[in-house]
Picture 1 (spheres, one colour):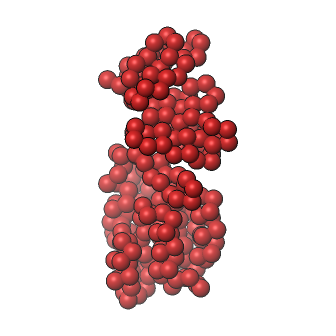
Picture 2 (cartoon, rainbow, N blue to C red; picture 1 turned 180 degrees about the horizontal axis):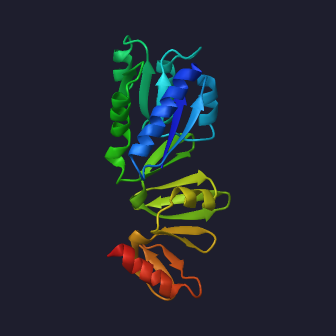
Length: 233
């Protein structure tokens, strides 16, 4: 699922962008996009302290902080953010290019142009799923299939990959909701494992690709072993 932020101080323009987004979603069944609308740059920056966005639709003439400055601020904390500018002027092409914007849409925005911009940030990665999260003030984006497991460490959760791990302040249920794929399995109350990354399973334990072992909860071996066979072969 993609999280998207629309920021435009003209409510009518923001509404038009939201309407085009709804049309795009209807034309792409199975593509999940959750959108929030903001009418000031400060409101968006405040929301970004609590939520991570994958895609930004930014007006250039917003308020005290223009869209270019806002995009630069976004880039400082989220280098993987995909930014699409919406503007009535073509005077900022060079700035948009410098910031590595995905697209530069001139108002009034045509449906065809909007769809083209969204295709660049969505459909090219539809099959390759990502999890986006913040650790120590930095935004990280990892391939879902690369995650071996997630394990509770008090109020934090450790997201473990083969070559790396990240400690994030979150709860297991929230992460499970974001990893809403059938091959992620909740092991007891403290762990989620990726069944595609299981190396071996016995009645006593599951062994992950990096050698980490998880005890098999009583009464779950038969179902769990069938799932492992399903997703590892």
